Image 1: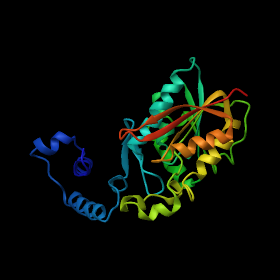
Image 2 (image 1 turned 90 degrees about the horizontal axis):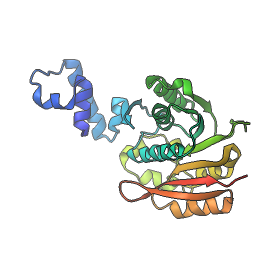
Image 3 (image 1 turned 180 degrees about the vertical axis):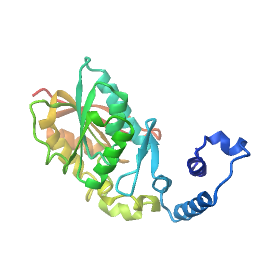
Length: 265
């Protein structure tokens, strides 16, 4: 659906075909005022997802707010890739770790699509964690996700039961580039966008620290920004604890997901 259809179907609580074939649909005064206000906000650059307060991701409904990044189609590839690798393992009850959960779209989708998984999901933002918890409740998977306020791994104890998979869509936009991006991006939390001077700060930290939390042969999956693949490969090479096993391209043929496997300890 286009943005106008999204707006009207939500306001009228109807399906898309009804907009065109149900001649009995009428807007109340309150609904008309909301649509007029929404159009003004959208013209000013505010993303439609924030205006409506929700979006769809991996077939699930998610609440969104200015406290968290809007789930994107490219990140669905990250979830699909994680499922592929977990399904390639012998059947088990898997433990996964998500670093920087934001709205919770990755953790909630994994829990919603895999019955044999429990997830620890961290975020430095208490506000984002609140939204993630709401989304876990909304999608009936809150019993299998533990949310933790943490700056990456800082509040996460090294445990006797390591994780089969660590997954992250970290901030990866270079600091100086953020102000030059389209107006819609300026509404999103800088905390979820700013990857430091070269955009790679969080990759260095996650690649360095994640081996302490992964099983032998455990997987690390991360989303990447445009043109970052070569430099991220170098970070893995310098770490010496992983082997890169796949680079997955997105729908625009951009190298988007990097999959690495920890070398046997």
